[in-house]
Image 1 (tube, helix red, strand yellow):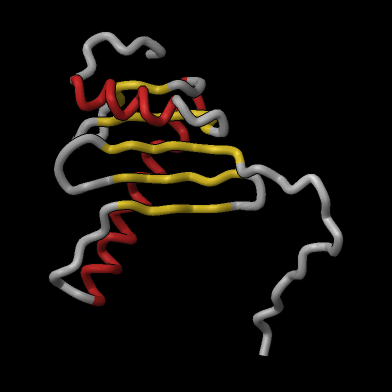
Image 2 (tube, rainbow, N blue to C red):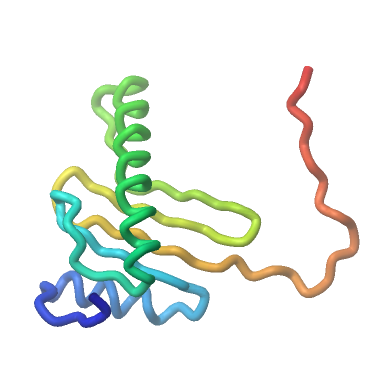
Length: 119
């Protein structure tokens, strides 16, 4: 599904804008039912992570709605030490998952501190 044929103009604009960033490693577009429209990743990886990330976005949306019933979750940002995942999952419309590599600093003067939450 690496071709952009059959995509709506809005979807093609999203792909063009996201693909312009050199740190973006992968883009996944789905419709509002969760059916895959486009992926730049391997199909195995796509079919493994897409349902999990969209389900996580729905759980986060539910938690936000529990805190404030008039609010709604539009996007979700997950960050690890090496990658960042952006999930844009509105209730209606195109759902976008973008994975990008985080630029590592060339110089490290001190090792990264780990926080200990044990009390």
